[in-house]
Length: 276
Image 1 (cartoon, rainbow, N blue to C red):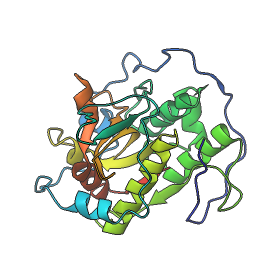
Image 2 (image 1 turned 30 degrees about the horizontal axis):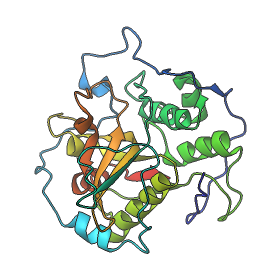
Image 3 (image 1 turned 90 degrees about the horizontal axis):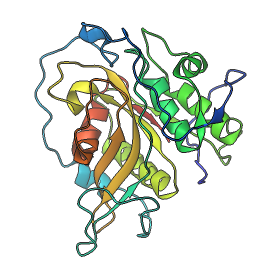
Image 4 (image 1 turned 90 degrees about the vertical axis):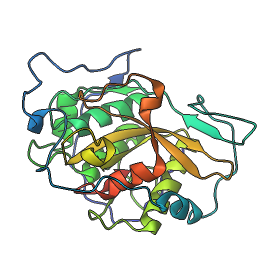
Protein backbone atom coordinates (compact mmCIF):
# COMPACT_ATOMS: atom_id res chain seq x y z
CA UNK A 1 0.00 0.00 0.00
CA UNK A 2 1.40 3.37 -1.01
CA UNK A 3 2.20 6.18 1.33
CA UNK A 4 -0.03 9.27 0.89
CA UNK A 5 1.93 12.51 1.31
CA UNK A 6 0.38 15.49 3.02
CA UNK A 7 0.61 19.00 1.56
CA UNK A 8 -2.08 20.74 3.65
CA UNK A 9 -2.55 21.41 7.36
CA UNK A 10 -4.26 18.42 9.01
CA UNK A 11 -7.32 18.84 11.23
CA UNK A 12 -7.68 17.41 14.73
CA UNK A 13 -9.52 14.07 14.73
CA UNK A 14 -12.45 13.04 16.83
CA UNK A 15 -11.62 10.16 19.16
CA UNK A 16 -12.94 6.69 18.53
CA UNK A 17 -14.13 4.71 15.54
CA UNK A 18 -16.78 2.16 14.69
CA UNK A 19 -16.42 -1.57 15.02
CA UNK A 20 -14.88 -2.94 11.85
CA UNK A 21 -15.50 -6.39 10.42
CA UNK A 22 -14.09 -8.22 7.39
CA UNK A 23 -16.09 -7.51 4.26
CA UNK A 24 -18.14 -10.52 3.27
CA UNK A 25 -18.04 -11.50 -0.43
CA UNK A 26 -20.69 -9.63 -2.37
CA UNK A 27 -21.81 -7.64 0.67
CA UNK A 28 -23.26 -4.22 -0.06
CA UNK A 29 -26.09 -1.95 0.90
CA UNK A 30 -29.35 -1.46 -0.99
CA UNK A 31 -31.74 1.40 -0.23
CA UNK A 32 -34.22 0.48 2.48
CA UNK A 33 -37.93 0.25 1.66
CA UNK A 34 -39.58 3.62 1.89
CA UNK A 35 -36.30 5.57 1.78
CA UNK A 36 -36.89 7.03 -1.68
CA UNK A 37 -38.74 10.31 -1.88
CA UNK A 38 -40.96 11.70 -4.59
CA UNK A 39 -39.08 15.01 -4.37
CA UNK A 40 -35.72 15.51 -6.02
CA UNK A 41 -34.33 17.21 -2.92
CA UNK A 42 -34.16 13.79 -1.25
CA UNK A 43 -33.48 11.54 -4.22
CA UNK A 44 -29.91 10.48 -3.83
CA UNK A 45 -28.10 13.78 -3.93
CA UNK A 46 -27.45 16.78 -1.71
CA UNK A 47 -29.03 19.45 -3.88
CA UNK A 48 -28.98 23.16 -4.50
CA UNK A 49 -31.55 25.24 -6.45
CA UNK A 50 -31.44 24.64 -10.19
CA UNK A 51 -30.11 27.66 -12.05
CA UNK A 52 -29.98 28.49 -15.72
CA UNK A 53 -26.59 27.39 -16.96
CA UNK A 54 -24.85 26.69 -20.22
CA UNK A 55 -24.15 23.03 -20.89
CA UNK A 56 -20.67 21.72 -20.12
CA UNK A 57 -18.39 22.72 -22.97
CA UNK A 58 -15.41 20.80 -24.24
CA UNK A 59 -12.25 22.52 -23.04
CA UNK A 60 -8.51 22.09 -23.19
CA UNK A 61 -8.39 21.21 -19.48
CA UNK A 62 -7.45 17.60 -20.21
CA UNK A 63 -4.52 18.52 -22.43
CA UNK A 64 -3.33 21.36 -20.20
CA UNK A 65 -3.68 19.45 -16.94
CA UNK A 66 -2.02 16.31 -18.28
CA UNK A 67 0.78 18.44 -19.75
CA UNK A 68 1.31 20.01 -16.32
CA UNK A 69 1.80 16.68 -14.59
CA UNK A 70 5.21 16.37 -12.97
CA UNK A 71 7.36 13.30 -13.58
CA UNK A 72 4.72 10.98 -15.08
CA UNK A 73 5.05 7.48 -13.71
CA UNK A 74 6.57 4.84 -15.94
CA UNK A 75 4.14 2.58 -17.78
CA UNK A 76 3.29 -0.53 -15.81
CA UNK A 77 0.80 -3.31 -16.28
CA UNK A 78 -2.66 -2.85 -14.80
CA UNK A 79 -2.67 -4.32 -11.26
CA UNK A 80 -6.25 -5.53 -11.46
CA UNK A 81 -8.18 -5.53 -14.71
CA UNK A 82 -8.52 -3.76 -18.01
CA UNK A 83 -11.39 -1.40 -18.75
CA UNK A 84 -12.97 -0.33 -22.04
CA UNK A 85 -10.96 0.45 -25.17
CA UNK A 86 -7.76 -1.17 -23.90
CA UNK A 87 -5.47 -1.56 -26.91
CA UNK A 88 -1.86 -2.67 -26.58
CA UNK A 89 -1.17 -1.71 -30.21
CA UNK A 90 -1.95 1.95 -29.55
CA UNK A 91 -0.31 2.10 -26.13
CA UNK A 92 -3.62 2.80 -24.37
CA UNK A 93 -3.98 0.99 -21.04
CA UNK A 94 -6.36 0.95 -18.12
CA UNK A 95 -6.12 0.46 -14.38
CA UNK A 96 -9.29 -0.70 -12.62
CA UNK A 97 -9.75 -1.87 -9.04
CA UNK A 98 -13.06 -3.76 -8.80
CA UNK A 99 -15.18 -2.45 -5.93
CA UNK A 100 -18.55 -3.72 -4.72
CA UNK A 101 -20.97 -0.85 -5.19
CA UNK A 102 -22.83 0.53 -2.16
CA UNK A 103 -26.11 2.37 -2.63
CA UNK A 104 -26.62 5.31 -0.29
CA UNK A 105 -29.42 4.71 2.20
CA UNK A 106 -30.63 8.33 2.37
CA UNK A 107 -30.45 11.34 0.10
CA UNK A 108 -27.52 12.77 2.08
CA UNK A 109 -25.53 9.55 2.65
CA UNK A 110 -23.32 9.71 -0.44
CA UNK A 111 -20.31 10.27 1.85
CA UNK A 112 -20.98 7.25 4.10
CA UNK A 113 -21.75 5.07 1.06
CA UNK A 114 -18.50 6.08 -0.65
CA UNK A 115 -16.62 5.46 2.59
CA UNK A 116 -18.25 2.02 2.78
CA UNK A 117 -16.95 1.24 -0.72
CA UNK A 118 -13.50 2.63 0.02
CA UNK A 119 -13.15 0.56 3.20
CA UNK A 120 -14.48 -2.47 1.34
CA UNK A 121 -11.56 -2.14 -1.07
CA UNK A 122 -9.27 -2.76 1.91
CA UNK A 123 -11.35 -5.70 3.21
CA UNK A 124 -13.22 -3.76 5.90
CA UNK A 125 -16.93 -3.34 6.51
CA UNK A 126 -19.02 -0.84 8.47
CA UNK A 127 -22.71 0.05 8.30
CA UNK A 128 -23.59 3.37 6.68
CA UNK A 129 -25.36 4.58 9.82
CA UNK A 130 -22.22 3.95 11.88
CA UNK A 131 -20.06 5.64 9.29
CA UNK A 132 -22.43 8.62 9.16
CA UNK A 133 -21.94 9.11 12.90
CA UNK A 134 -18.16 8.90 12.60
CA UNK A 135 -18.18 11.27 9.62
CA UNK A 136 -20.46 13.83 11.29
CA UNK A 137 -22.74 13.53 8.26
CA UNK A 138 -25.56 16.07 8.25
CA UNK A 139 -28.78 16.22 6.24
CA UNK A 140 -28.09 19.92 5.71
CA UNK A 141 -24.35 20.00 4.96
CA UNK A 142 -23.61 16.41 3.94
CA UNK A 143 -20.13 15.08 4.75
CA UNK A 144 -16.91 17.07 5.03
CA UNK A 145 -13.89 15.80 3.07
CA UNK A 146 -11.56 16.23 6.03
CA UNK A 147 -13.80 13.91 8.04
CA UNK A 148 -13.67 11.33 5.23
CA UNK A 149 -9.87 11.48 5.20
CA UNK A 150 -9.77 11.18 8.97
CA UNK A 151 -12.08 8.15 9.17
CA UNK A 152 -10.36 6.41 6.25
CA UNK A 153 -6.92 6.95 7.84
CA UNK A 154 -8.01 5.63 11.25
CA UNK A 155 -9.55 2.46 9.84
CA UNK A 156 -7.11 1.65 7.03
CA UNK A 157 -3.85 2.80 8.67
CA UNK A 158 -4.84 2.62 12.33
CA UNK A 159 -4.39 6.33 13.00
CA UNK A 160 -4.34 9.76 11.45
CA UNK A 161 -1.02 10.75 9.85
CA UNK A 162 1.15 12.44 12.47
CA UNK A 163 3.14 14.48 9.96
CA UNK A 164 3.73 15.07 6.26
CA UNK A 165 5.68 11.82 5.89
CA UNK A 166 3.25 9.46 7.61
CA UNK A 167 0.91 7.11 5.75
CA UNK A 168 -2.73 8.11 5.55
CA UNK A 169 -5.47 9.75 3.52
CA UNK A 170 -5.53 13.48 2.85
CA UNK A 171 -8.26 15.95 1.90
CA UNK A 172 -8.15 18.80 -0.62
CA UNK A 173 -10.90 21.45 -0.72
CA UNK A 174 -11.26 24.26 -3.24
CA UNK A 175 -13.67 27.01 -4.28
CA UNK A 176 -16.39 26.51 -6.86
CA UNK A 177 -15.41 27.68 -10.32
CA UNK A 178 -11.84 28.45 -9.26
CA UNK A 179 -9.93 25.21 -9.81
CA UNK A 180 -6.82 26.10 -11.79
CA UNK A 181 -4.95 24.04 -14.36
CA UNK A 182 -2.43 23.33 -11.61
CA UNK A 183 -5.22 22.13 -9.29
CA UNK A 184 -6.50 19.80 -12.00
CA UNK A 185 -3.00 18.55 -12.76
CA UNK A 186 -2.35 17.87 -9.07
CA UNK A 187 -5.60 15.89 -8.82
CA UNK A 188 -4.75 13.82 -11.91
CA UNK A 189 -1.24 13.17 -10.61
CA UNK A 190 -2.48 12.08 -7.18
CA UNK A 191 -5.23 9.96 -8.72
CA UNK A 192 -2.80 8.14 -11.01
CA UNK A 193 -0.32 7.52 -8.19
CA UNK A 194 -3.07 6.16 -5.96
CA UNK A 195 -4.50 3.82 -8.57
CA UNK A 196 -1.09 2.64 -9.74
CA UNK A 197 -0.22 1.97 -6.10
CA UNK A 198 -3.32 -0.16 -5.51
CA UNK A 199 -5.47 2.49 -3.78
CA UNK A 200 -8.83 4.07 -4.58
CA UNK A 201 -9.99 7.61 -3.85
CA UNK A 202 -13.09 9.81 -3.87
CA UNK A 203 -14.02 13.13 -5.44
CA UNK A 204 -16.89 15.61 -5.20
CA UNK A 205 -18.75 16.68 -8.34
CA UNK A 206 -21.69 18.84 -9.33
CA UNK A 207 -24.55 16.49 -10.19
CA UNK A 208 -25.87 18.37 -13.22
CA UNK A 209 -22.40 18.84 -14.73
CA UNK A 210 -21.79 15.10 -14.58
CA UNK A 211 -25.36 14.05 -15.44
CA UNK A 212 -26.92 16.79 -17.64
CA UNK A 213 -30.19 14.87 -17.87
CA UNK A 214 -30.73 15.29 -14.13
CA UNK A 215 -32.14 18.72 -13.24
CA UNK A 216 -30.17 18.76 -10.00
CA UNK A 217 -27.33 20.99 -8.88
CA UNK A 218 -25.38 20.13 -5.75
CA UNK A 219 -22.31 18.50 -4.23
CA UNK A 220 -22.13 14.75 -4.63
CA UNK A 221 -19.29 12.37 -3.69
CA UNK A 222 -18.31 9.43 -5.88
CA UNK A 223 -15.64 6.74 -5.65
CA UNK A 224 -12.86 6.76 -8.26
CA UNK A 225 -11.55 3.26 -8.97
CA UNK A 226 -10.17 3.34 -12.49
CA UNK A 227 -8.44 5.36 -15.21
CA UNK A 228 -7.64 4.94 -18.88
CA UNK A 229 -4.27 6.32 -20.00
CA UNK A 230 -3.16 7.33 -23.48
CA UNK A 231 0.12 6.36 -25.08
CA UNK A 232 1.88 9.27 -23.37
CA UNK A 233 0.58 8.44 -19.90
CA UNK A 234 -2.10 11.16 -19.86
CA UNK A 235 -5.45 10.27 -18.32
CA UNK A 236 -8.14 10.03 -21.02
CA UNK A 237 -11.03 8.66 -18.98
CA UNK A 238 -11.96 8.24 -15.32
CA UNK A 239 -14.00 5.35 -13.92
CA UNK A 240 -16.32 5.82 -10.95
CA UNK A 241 -18.77 3.98 -8.74
CA UNK A 242 -21.66 6.32 -7.96
CA UNK A 243 -23.58 5.54 -4.74
CA UNK A 244 -26.79 7.29 -5.81
CA UNK A 245 -29.86 5.14 -6.48
CA UNK A 246 -30.72 7.54 -9.31
CA UNK A 247 -27.75 6.19 -11.29
CA UNK A 248 -28.40 2.96 -13.16
CA UNK A 249 -25.38 1.31 -14.74
CA UNK A 250 -26.62 -0.45 -17.87
CA UNK A 251 -23.10 -1.26 -19.09
CA UNK A 252 -19.44 -0.95 -18.14
CA UNK A 253 -19.13 2.12 -20.36
CA UNK A 254 -21.59 3.98 -18.12
CA UNK A 255 -18.95 4.03 -15.38
CA UNK A 256 -16.48 5.98 -17.53
CA UNK A 257 -16.25 9.75 -18.08
CA UNK A 258 -13.94 11.79 -20.29
CA UNK A 259 -11.36 13.57 -18.16
CA UNK A 260 -12.45 17.06 -19.28
CA UNK A 261 -16.04 16.36 -18.32
CA UNK A 262 -15.10 14.98 -14.92
CA UNK A 263 -12.77 17.89 -14.13
CA UNK A 264 -15.46 20.37 -15.15
CA UNK A 265 -17.96 18.58 -12.88
CA UNK A 266 -15.46 18.93 -10.03
CA UNK A 267 -14.90 22.62 -10.78
CA UNK A 268 -18.65 23.36 -10.84
CA UNK A 269 -19.24 21.55 -7.56
CA UNK A 270 -20.48 23.98 -4.85
CA UNK A 271 -17.51 22.77 -2.77
CA UNK A 272 -14.84 21.14 -4.95
CA UNK A 273 -12.76 18.57 -3.13
CA UNK A 274 -11.38 15.06 -2.97
CA UNK A 275 -9.58 12.67 -0.68
CA UNK A 276 -6.58 10.66 -1.78
